[in-house]
Image 1 (cartoon, rainbow, N blue to C red):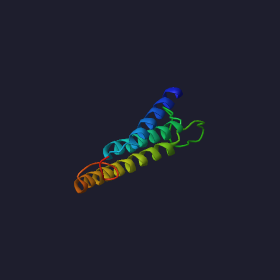
Image 2: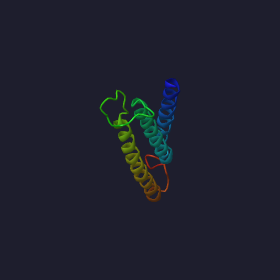
Image 3: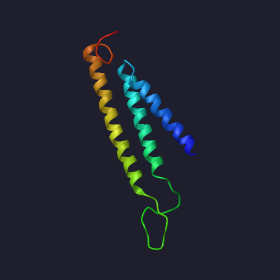
Image 4: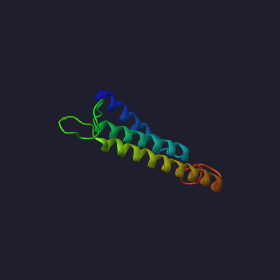
Length: 108
């Protein structure tokens, strides 16, 4: 299972980086989104998901679920959504002002 998770994180990060290096703005936005998904999945996997155990330490229990990775991922999802919305609006505004969607504002 760990190998599959590492493969998925690597695939998401690789595709995100490839799209991030494109010359158009909307593939760059998709690349940033894929990179944020890869980071979220990595954070969630590092939290060692446990099923059927409480998130609060109770007296007499030796196992508990760590709530910190889940809180980090939820926070990252909200921040990533806000960032994606801002970058999409910024890309649309640049397209309207410049007339194209090239990253540096001019056609190659």
